Image (tube, rainbow, N blue to C red; front, side):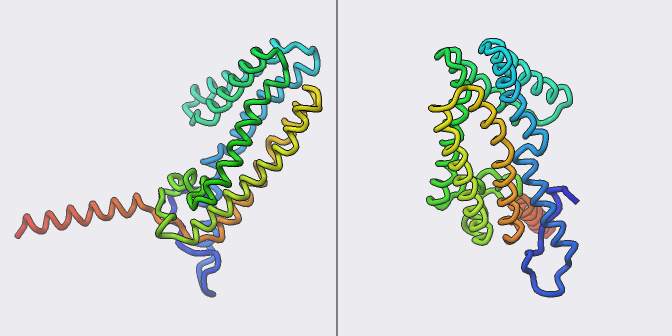
Length: 249
């Protein structure tokens, strides 16, 4: 069971005698939602391939233009494939924009390693955003996943257990991304383009998987989300029933 439409009603720490199948369904719902929000395996591949192609071509022939054109071309190809298959394109489009910024910046400076700088700055900014929003009591992971779980912002005031889980997850994302930046920025200054590129490619997926896994752990132990859409639908049905009853009187 992976459908995010199935309600998750049992807390993992429910009393003895709780239905283990319902608990398993709740964890599956969380897993499915995380895959939807972060793009799953395909999204990870689309994130890695352009940078991998860039550094591979540059390592072979030291040609910035050829490497940049190849990275842009494969990014556009990934978007085209999604459009043809009528899949969600948000992850592929974000890859195109990231590659485009990197290419433009590298072309402007003439330094191949500057292809990676916009993405590194974005990662640093994202790390700060995760931590700052957690401190402010509006954790970024909650803002991202709330609509996916159909709870919107109900977790802020009505579901403190989920707010705590979102806060922990956001801190995890923030500090993991900060650790990644602590590795990459010194390499940007001291290493050559090939060294920086291969390290950056190798750090694309493992930190991401760690952050997603920790998010899953925190949410799997949290109370079930409050489906605000179902509540609104129920309220509308009740209002219609009340109106119909008044008209029959």
